[in-house]
Length: 560
Image (cartoon, rainbow, N blue to C red; front, side, top):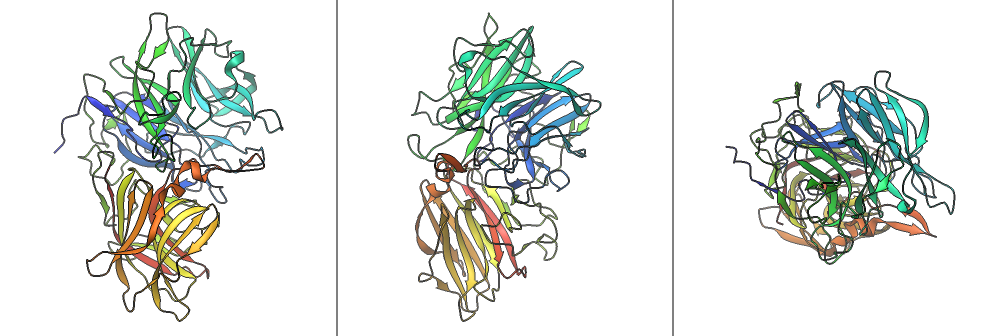
């Protein structure tokens, strides 16, 4: 039975990797769209009626027609999606970044539309690839596309400012040449532009200071759409840059929304580091803050700081079950318990017995959609069957089903049945960041073909395998695998008869952090760290034969 909606918003409202939020209200319904990078389905959506309780709706870009991530680099793919509503249609603008190294950023921007939040979504229309963080602004009958202009030339700082291009909604195409947005001279590198019109002004929200601990949301305004803009003399709308002891750090990349009662809120990203400005294993998460307007027309977050708890809007309207009419549109069906308005952020156990024909919205798949050629929920009832994929360094064809780590302390468990035939067959559970940083508790075969349980890891591309510490399994084919995350420490365990036994040494969980994943070489970006850590189910078949493993009862148990 549904509990009454509280009057407190507890941040982050979307824990785990949910960065770059784009917030939208249509009627009584709020939607949040967040970045997904190299994970399918692309652009993760959540729904709420009260800004307190959020239900996952899964990903929008769930087919190769909408999103092809083949060959996508680590932390490439979908950056900073933008969700808007006009002419009875949801408009989703997104990028598919294929390169960001060597000074280049190849970032084609596309738009797709749908009459309902659950689709059907139209064939994506290419817009341009001049820069990233593209967003649509609807100004009555007119629409404009805003974006950062990326500058590849050495010693030019990477950014040539912001631009706006007219967008024809009926023809679904850009019209005319882009117009540079006139910004204050001191603005420097800014990104993540979001534009709104309020009380006769155009307000431009931007993300300044990079994506790390100097991140902030800033506001500028102008009487005309392209400027010149003046910056709020008060300073950042929200930031933690001068407050290293706050629980929520990296506050930035904001999007404003007005409730039906005329209250305003800012959706923005935050991070929860391990220690004082330490590594962020959970990645960048979504938080909310109330906003008021000053007498002279500037938006303000009351303290200007990210907070773990903020007041909810009132009167609360209650979070009705997804499936209710939302602005005349059915919302997306997810397979979750529709009497529960939570997505797991209330820190409850989440168990999947794989009894549904499709993966639940908590799961994502790496670089390819969950298609029957490598994954099945029907081949064996109440099991997830994974056919072994390519190696962890491959940018095509992996067989990894993961879910976001949402708590600094927690446990992940799954039951697996598997019969490897050689050392090139491996299956088990993983704590995963990217192709260069991961841990893997797996069953494989030794040189004599006997099943053995081992731990492998990769730290910035350096591979290690604990061959001497492996555990012979004899004739055992079905076993329970587990991992425990305790802040900076990760440990694996297993059970064959209900009694848990440790496997391998204590491991450094900060290898799975945004900061550790970020690498530079000769002053150039080698790898970005945008995704946060995942836990999940992984199967390799390095012979190319696709030997399968069956998984059951996968549980994530967050502790804090």
